[in-house]
Image (cartoon, rainbow over all chains, first blue to last red; front, side, top):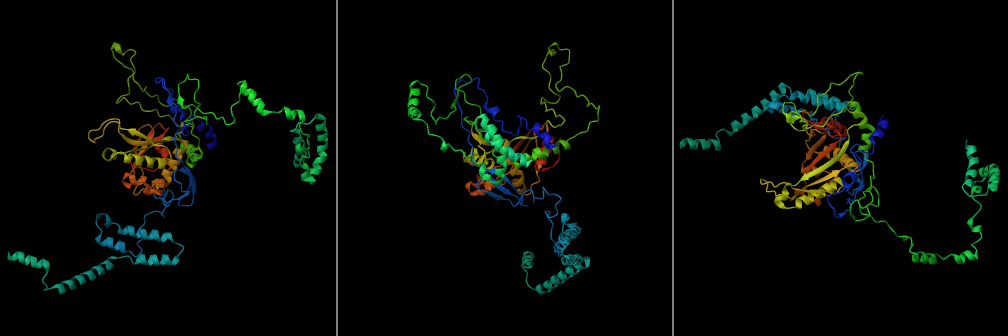
Length: 187
Length: 355
């Protein structure tokens, strides 16, 4: 198919071919002086081997004298060019569920509904390494360890206790803020 | 087969040399017997005759041969040959079509304006010819049942209608709602598959007004480094009071890329530079000039990630590295077609599509 196309595409008026003739065979009808024919200046170019991140390579003409260019980021590993690739997705690794716990507690509008997303994340993570059954088991157990309401309540209770202790220990000591208030009251 | 070839070889060998007819007959007869011998001992295939065995030239010929004398004679007669070191030089000036000494055509390597190349075949170009062109035609195929006739469209230019006698023979009117005549979009066949025609890299250095021409010099260097072509500078056409811009100040630089250089630049841009842009969603899909030429721009930090600039980044003052505007001129008649083509080349587009 493509070979059948080729002869037509390769016509003499192929736009991909340099057709500098049109501009320079311009016949100056009005000017009668001799025009200087300048030699075109061409920067020196080298042939460079560009090695992409997946190991494929191609040659390129470039002004850079470096013979090999290795790219770390290119179309082979950029998510914009590989939208279906799961490896390139920006997945949050939250095995212990700590980030999910934080979000459940302090999450505001856009963060609040994410605790279901965290569960999905962990499942994605488990699908990454199914060859290792031990890690899978671990992940599942951790998933079961995900903060439930009881856990969170316990955490709150602990923190409440700590706050209570602090209040008791600070009782009777002149506080900066309180002293200022007292001064204000006196005035 | 092999056997007959073996027989043929000695005959052909002798055919090339001038031999008398009788000798040739003899040789031909001998060829069959020789072939067997050669098969046994390949060294017999070598020619036994040698020029060393020939008799030397006669005394008379040797004395008569005097090249120096003959040259002098020719010079005297003003028929001297051009010297062996003679080289044609094309004229420095073009003195018009009627001048006796016209410069050779540009395709002639002797021409002063000859540009050699292409030196390599770009992988992108071969991909276009092998894959993209055929795919594009398949993608844009629209089935028409036999006997289908597309509805006739009205004329693009309207006639003047009215009682006014001056309307007769008047130049046709432009389209309704503006004078711009858009390009006609024809159905895509194997003859008009869009392709990239040329690519323009442009940079406008506004800092020239404030801090002098150094910015433009650096921009030109960067452009040349990136594209591998010489830069053309452009002067401001109009004075701009708000910017403090005067007329005739060199303020912009462009490079026009075609053919090999264009494809190499495109390849580099798509495969190496674009993926490294942070938080980039692609080229906005609304770009275009309605006739198949798409433009997009890059910030100065993106220019810094071109492999050539990155290679010796310290060579340029970091604040003077320019941003770029890249225009891709395609042979497509509409932006929609051009976008489809560039998507096939690997340029991502985002946003609302306007056709």
